[in-house]
Image 1: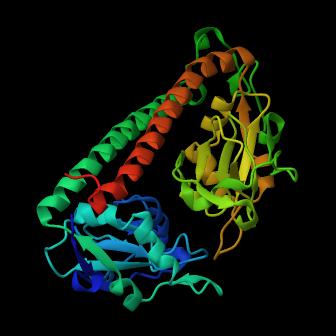
Image 2: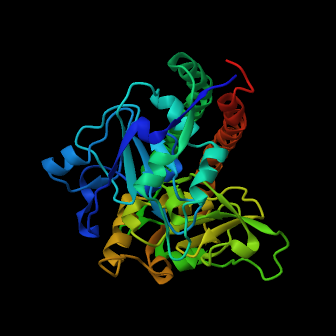
Length: 402
């Protein structure tokens, strides 16, 4: 099956994104970040990041169905040219200055098709040739628009997109279940340890504001911080690296594989089952996640604090350090206007309520089951993504007919 090759410049016009100082982030209007572009084939239905922007900026840097967003700069060529596509209009939303927007100038392209096509390994390889790698990889407009894509008829584009979308629909359904499980664990935590409606609360005395047998202590009293690092005698010749941009609100979204001798200098932290990773830079972004059954090759950035529960169950510690109050504590403790961050000591000295062991055991018996179900669904999603990415090049080359 022979398909027409068309330059992107015949299909799109390119625009650079909105650059803002750090003080404008965190409130305002939806903002498409570099991380969201990097980690998604398509823009999520809801953009959760916010930025202060004017009506003029929202008009100039708007997001409409069919727009393609491409990362224009990065520290490595692997990150250059990562893309995601808008499948609807996003009123009042703008996009990051480290990305480029390609807006359609023709109706020859089905947005879902180009969203998958631009993630082809063969197409992604084109971007590596644009990287000088002297300081940071960069992407010029003329280079981007000079790239060629294979373009079958709109009907075939839709058929290919439908096949691939079936995988994403299953992934989305699993993500909804994951979200419900997370909410169930957080509700249970709040009911037992915030509202103090734990089993047996009716017959428990309150002493100095807490149930009898409970006590306030420091996180360092119940958990170790950064207790494990990549060993010098590490046996594998590669790592699966998790950086700050790959983690958000309880999810490790991606892992990047590197040969050991090419791994980023920050790839040094290790974690075991039940450990919690918490991003120390801009804690308001909530770059935290629970690590369950990690592989030996999983390595985490030194931008994370790794919390290992020792005198409380991991499930309790995870819920405690992901409450909005704890996030607020970290945000207030940050230093540096341009690069606001906390240090491991801020986790060590944070206050935490330690209930009695019986209540903790009862909580963990329920919460552990929830987090293991969540892990199973996340593993299913991982397998679905692998299957989708395996069939993707075969569909785009015509090897698998539709």
